[in-house]
Length: 314
Image (cartoon, rainbow, N blue to C red; front, side):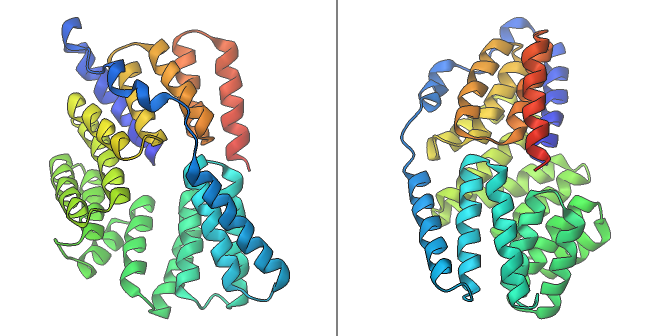
C-alpha cells in the first residue's frame, strides 16, 4: 500500500514539475536531513533481540505455555518493523499460528494478531476470515471492527467498509479518523482525507504519543504529495524524522521527492543507500531499481530487482 502511494506521488510530482520553472523545483536541502543519514548505534535492536531470546528460552523450558508464542511473535513483529526483515514477519506468522492452533482459533486477540500479520503480507482475504471469527468471538469488538475497515478497504469492499465505519463513528477517536481519512482518499475525496488526518494528528499530539505522531506525519506527507503540496510533504517527512531519526519510510519519501520532483537521481540514490543499510524492506530496492533504470544503469537495476523479488518470495 505504501509503495502504491508513492507511485501516486510520482505522478503528482511529474505533473507539478512540468508546470513549474527550474527555480521553483528545489524543495529539499541536504542540511535538513544529512544528520539523519548517519549510521548510529541502535539500542532498540538490542532490546528486541534480548526480548526474543527471553521468550525463546521460556518456550524451551515450557513448550506448552501457548501465551509465550504470542510474546515471541510480538518480538518478531517489533524486529520486522525496525529492520524490514521478511524472515521476522514469517517467524511471527509461525508463532501466531501455533498460538491460534493451541486455542482452537477462539482467542480474539490471537486472531487479530495473525490477521495483522497477514495484512503486512498483503494476504487480505485470509486476514478477513480471521477477523470474522474474532468478530463472532466479541472480545474487544471495536478493535476487530477497526481492522475489518482496513481489510475491506484494501479489498475494495466499500459497502462493508462504510458499514463498519458507521459502527465505530467517533470524531474524537484517533483510530476512527485515520480510517475515515483512508476511506475518503480511496473514493477520491483528497481534501477531506487530509482534513481528517490533520485532525487525527492533533489528537495524537494531545496524547503525546510519539509513535502515533510519527506515523501521522508520514501519512500526511503522502497525502500532501498527492495534492501537489510538495513543500508540505517534505516538511512532514522531516517532522517524522525529528521524532525518529531512523524512520526509513520518511527518508524514502524525501528520496522520492528528490528523484521525481527535483530530478536529482544521484542524490536520491545516496539517500536510499543509507536506508537499505538499516532496513531490509524489499520496497526500497524496488525504488532503487527504478532510479537506476532512469540513470540507465542496467546492471545495478537488475541486481536490486533480484533482491526485491527474492525477498517477497519468502
